[in-house]
Length: 117
Length: 111
Image 1 (cartoon, rainbow over the protein chains, first blue to last red):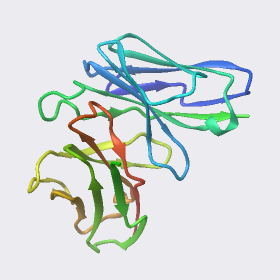
Image 2: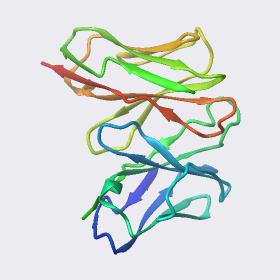
Image 3: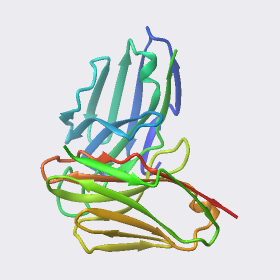
Image 4: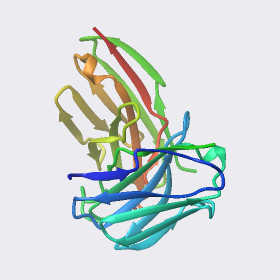
C-alpha cells in the first residue's frame, strides 16, 4: 500500500447505527486530518492530530468521535448520525503541521462515501 | 474573516484552448497556497504549493502563480484528461495545519 488509504470506500448506515471509518498513511507523516465534503460546499476541516495528539476540533458535533492510536492510523467513530451527515469523508496527512516549506503539504486519501438513512 | 474565492465556478474548454482559473483570497497572513485536482468520487490530488508572491510552479500543461491577493492556475493546450475540479486552499501563519478551501472550479475539456 502507498499513500493514504481509507476503508470502507462506501458506507450506508441508519441513524441508530454505530460505525467507524479507518484511515492509514504509509508516508511516515506526523500529522493527520479529517475533512467533510458535502455537495455544493467547500471541504470543511473537522479534526487535526499531530503526533497522536488532537490539536483542532472545528466545532464538530459529538456524534463524530476521532481516535488516533499512532501517527499512521486515524479513525472516525460515528454514532446516532443525521441524514445531513451524508457526505464524502476525507482523510489527509502531512509531514508536519507547519514546519519547513513543503512539509505542511497535505496528501489525501480516496475518501469514504457515507450515506445516512 | 478569512475568505478564499474561486472563479469561474465552471469552465468548458475545447481541447487545445488555453485558459486560467482564479483564486482570490483575503487573509491576515498567508502561509501557503495550495492547488489540488479532484476527480469525481475521489480524494483531492496535490498539484502545487506556493509560499511567496512572485513564485511560479509548472507541471506538464499546468502553471500556478501567486500574487499578494490572488493565485492563477493556467492550463495550456488542455486535453480531455485535464477535466476535473480544481481546488484552491490556503493556510495562514496563525492557523497551523488548517487548510481553508475555496469552492472549486469545475473544468470540462471536450475533444
